[in-house]
Length: 134
Image (tube, rainbow, N blue to C red; front, side, top):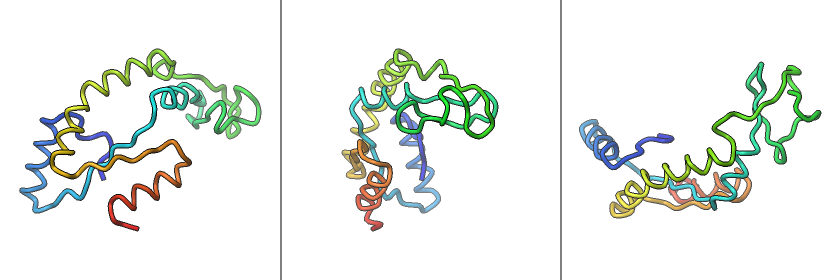
């Protein structure tokens, strides 16, 4: 299982070559899909403890006391790259660089589109089913 790699067609080709040389087959490539606004809301809502680095979410996993880590009492902050504007820029770059990669794996019949708007457990079940594991 590779997460976040490959990110370009050149990297995908190099990975394919490496796997062939090692006699390893590629079972599938999962494209987790979520509307942009939901991605922005998920990332922009993230807060991190300044001391222990534990993660929270302002609506989905809030701390017991706003702005304070439940584990160590440290102050929570929003990373610079988690602000809505920064997330949108990251998503635009991601879309531009990965859309050729999506097409590359679709042509090879290896791409599985998985909706991930539900609970993580449901996304996991869909992933296993797509890969023929469950």
